[in-house]
View 1 (cartoon, rainbow, N blue to C red):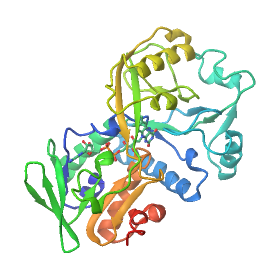
View 2: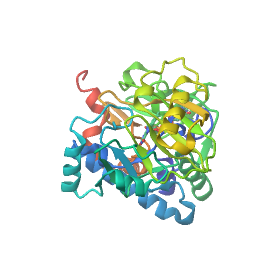
View 3: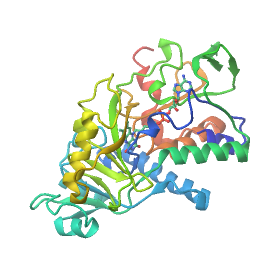
Length: 365
Ligand SMILES: Cc1cc2nc3c(=O)[nH]c(=O)nc-3n(C[C@H](O)[C@H](O)[C@H](O)COP(=O)(O)OP(=O)(O)OC[C@H]3O[C@@H](n4cnc5c(N)ncnc54)[C@H](O)[C@@H]3O)c2cc1C
């Protein structure tokens, strides 16, 4: 958002409580795809537009747009959605629906899997089982993307970045947002305020009237040391999700292990979930038996109540926008364009029409 607004000639100040890219985006599987949203026409359209926006964004950056990788994704039929249980419809129905939609996806068996991922245990798929291969899906290295966009916004368009500056509250006057107050008591005035503080979105507003109901969940990601064993695809098995994370490292997570996390858990390589993820990796990839996690991180997913995005204005308050969503890496490139056009040109993106914040405020109005 900051990049797109600065690019459009707006004077932008980005206020960050810590360092950039340290929020949930640092600890994300960051799958970019529309294939998990096919049970909802509007969410599917939104996600397709989001994938297209990522492609456009990296194309705009040319050789420097190096954060979006599309090695293809393989999803076992029993694998759930990111952070959630298995989708309601069985995955074989999902394939039919994907085919009807024209989404690049193919049914594969054990032989195909062995060809696509030769390092996996031969029984990885299970006898007679099948998986879905999404040959064009991929992931984003979110911190790399965030760093590149912020750098470009500063260098090319003069954006101001204020790190180590926590926002304490939104300042309003006669039904209009006029700026923010920082933890040090400083007031920063603005014509428009955008709240993109993710899981902290309610902590920065300083008023219960402006809070969005969130149902956050915890996720743990474990990282291996650099391994010499190639895993080419993004793998989503029922018990382990794996992908490359740069420098030869692998990134590991699992829905069932996330459910064992407690709020006061400390993310360390010897966390039981990290140990179990590494064990499961060894089971999936025999060459990696005995591997340990080198690092682990725990993050909180910023999930608006109901699980769907929350992007737009609040009723009764002008000049204030909020953008909080799970799947926020998936939609990040689109949100920037959507809010730019809405704020500067008064053109709300049709893709976000069903996902406006006012749905949470209607009952109270
Ligand atoms: C384990 C896991 C797996 C995931 N997998 C996927 C996936 O496959 N695909 C996908 O699309 N999404 C996935 N997500 C979700 C996705 O990572 C988030 O939706 C996304 O990172 C949210 O980005 P954000 O910019 O809104 O929030 P954040 O990245 O959290 O950024 C918010 C920023 O606000 C700053 N901040 C906080 N308080 C203040 C304050 N008071 N003042 C100023 N700044 C403040 C923080 O420091 C932070 O930098 C996953 C999440 C987890 C945890």
